Image (cartoon, rainbow, N blue to C red; front, side, top):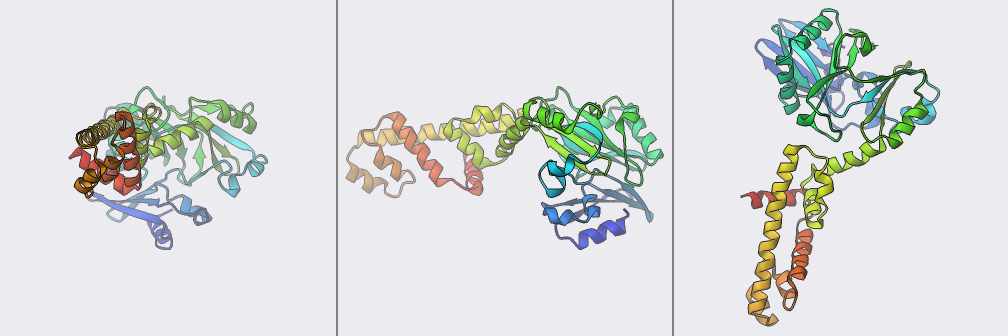
Length: 359
């Protein structure tokens, strides 16, 4: 695919995008998409826009192929188990829980990029790794010289999603020819290559069984001789990933803190995200403690409900104050929490509230 073909695809499909960068005298175009419907991928060429990168210098184009969009087993009609069981398996690989990384060459320099950016935290970390590895640079140069397109996955503590990996590493997950054919990664002499399984002894039934039981991996990527690529994710991963997604939303973190269920969420997050959320937790619990003490004090000193109503009718915690006379501290705290749950329900409301707490 060349730039004209990619641009025409983007122009005719609203869900697909092109980002433009410039490094020195080189223009860089990165193609991606924004939550398209399955029907948008009926044109297989559109699947190639998942991280496709094209550089242009002095009218000379250079294309860097990525891994095309592919789906989970039983996610769409073409990946139903009823359909897949009649197809011949070509390759089975471990599905890594990281971020897609590619490299491009600008004026002889090796530049890292994530699926859609040259400046994302994942791209910055990948750049650090390649800058410190002469072996990786030579490996990339050798593949490029033979018109191969290597694709990596960044895994490790820096880029933790759900699965724990002991160190940051770039794992070779795919290599494509100039024509787009997938070349077996085991044929390349690179020490960090995703694990493969023997297709003669490891069947689709075995994969499903492992996905039901395995707790230490994301799952599998299966390539068929017909060209399809399908993801099989473990049940444990899917469950944890939902928790991870929940942790990206302030309203979910807010609810976990108020409900006292935050520990299960924190246990699977990166240290950086864990630190941020614990800060929110400390601020929110301090806020709850302050207003619990306030409501307890004002009602202890003045238990007359008519006077309380007159004095605090415009107070934010009027509802809680009016329920507080004669109540224990624990009961008042419950009412403060109940009030907060009702007052802050939407994501934007909770974000603004956390922002105020930090100020």
